[in-house]
Image 1 (cartoon, rainbow, N blue to C red):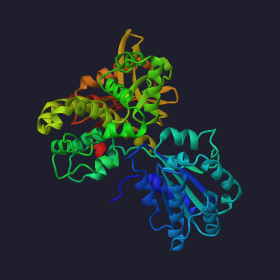
Image 2 (cartoon, one colour; image 1 turned 60 degrees about the vertical axis):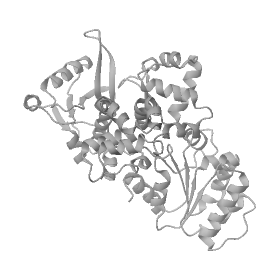
Image 3 (cartoon, rainbow, N blue to C red; image 1 turned 45 degrees about the vertical axis):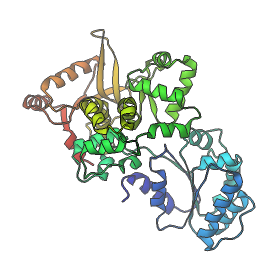
Image 4 (cartoon, helix red, strand yellow; image 1 turned 135 degrees about the vertical axis):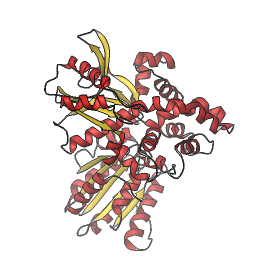
Length: 463
């Protein structure tokens, strides 16, 4: 069953239905579901599907030739003498009928023959623009796709007609994978998988949450047991420093100097490693909402699976390899609520973005993030889980609580107090709770008239 990606499928179909040539660039991190999306889109359509391999130019040409000739002619004839001939064959066939050419793992093709992008540029300009060919260039190498395909210096710059960066599924989309788990358990599953479809498929909603996590992470044969390390090995030559950097950030280091010192690198070298990890979608550089000064940026793990793995799997590898899965779960279970705090904040921000896009907020926002810094009134450090801005003016303030207790009125009062540091005008407040709110909190929110209370169940119901 295909789940999610409704917007991407609809936009791809709109492009497909429009007449004329199209070149669509589609990229995203490994395992995010790019190939599945293309396969779903190409159902019941005439499609030449070609997956490039990390191999020689000749072998990739042979595979492309087989894809073109088998799919369109019904038999296999000799391999095309070169790529130009292969594309010209498709150009001729697509003069009057729509044909999709999906080239998956395009970076491998470019690596085997660096001239492929220049050839495509020439053919698009001279021949393909006059056809009904629908090209999809897909890749997992984030830096290559963004720089060598979409970038200004790329021969293909200006030739694409659309681009799709495929992100992990959000919490509401993740819920579509499970019919038996509670919203709370689904939130935890989202928090340990990061919404990556292939990882979600490792979970069985007929089993308890504890059983699922134990079976998926804490067995040497489990698919996710060494997944972060395997991904790093696929993407970088020597993963040792990358591994150390992610582990250091997972354990609380956020600033360049601190990370470099703990890992044992010069800051300039560490900065390059950090940049590479950001390009891979594993890390992100965060700034306080509305502030983008480089000196205020901090580093955080963007991929929930990596954060979970480095906090809870990596420290217990020896126990896991000795078959002590249940003992590992017993050790970490009490720490899951603390781990879920930042995850719940992400879920709440996702909810607000959805509400914003649907026009269901009191005002339209242009940025939603978190804020930390010095409260100029008290000269003390302060933090707000969610700050929503309309251009440069703060309009929304939010607090998120992943706790078994009902959220009390004091949380709302503290949020309002911290928001005063922004000198807000015509703002509104959101409180998010895993469970619910006390009667006093509900009474205060109702009397204020500018506050919305949202539970995890409320978020789940909007999926």
